[in-house]
Amino acid sequence: MKKIFKFILNTIPRPILIRLSIVVRPILELALKGNRFTDPIDGKSFRAFLPYGYGNQRNNVLSPSTLSLERHRLLWLYLKNETDFFTSEEKKKVLHFAPEQEFYKRFKKQANIEYTTTDLLSPLADVKADICNLPFEDNTYDYILCNHVLEHIPDDTKAMQELYRVLKPGGMGIFQIPQDLSRANTFSDDSIVDQKERAKIFGQYDHVRVYGRDYFDKLRSIGFKVVEEDYANKIAPELVEKYCLAKGEIIPVCFK
Image 1 (cartoon, rainbow, N blue to C red):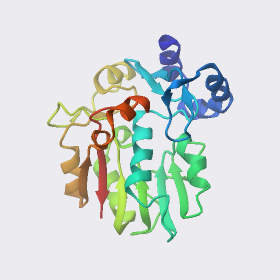
Image 2: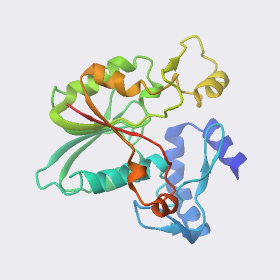
Image 3: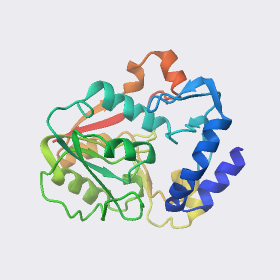
Image 4: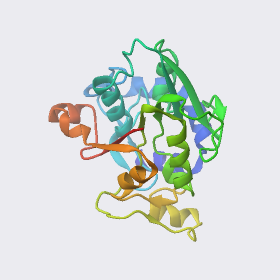
């Protein structure tokens, strides 16, 4: 199964995968139904989660029902337990880059948020836009979700500046990225253009850098106040295992 999933991820474009998943998901739910692992996003349980990874495949990470990964489930729990994202009586404006399927319909249905999605290619995007040149006014959004996007952007400094510009003063942004915490400094090399070489060095064929621990300070240099939230460490160990979360993943919670 690992080889099949690896082949699919590396050969089928993401917009097509999103459309295909609508058909495949009910089949996966039925085939893997059980009690070992639970997806906290929808509360459904399974005997196993699916493997995932463009290079090295990780076991038990992709939820059969929501297609969420570890980072998505961690983000859901953080928003639910630590913010007013789901409970605010005052309507909040939310901007979501490259919207994930597991969140899209749920956020669209929330009466307490005004939800806008954006991306250049995603079929789930309300607004087709370049993150380095956003068509939104200054100080517009209470929440910005931009997860596993910046590692694809050659000029991530400009992208961060745009995120800062459109976030309201006092607003919150969560900008998760794949991060190698063993690295002090982010590594990039614009001369690496071969997709196989990029996958080998950066972890995925369409990534342009590997972020290190300096990622948080780069966000701070843009103007954000950054909380390095090791949220999985605040969750009971038995739930970390049951929800298939990644230990040690830091959520970059950014404020303006």
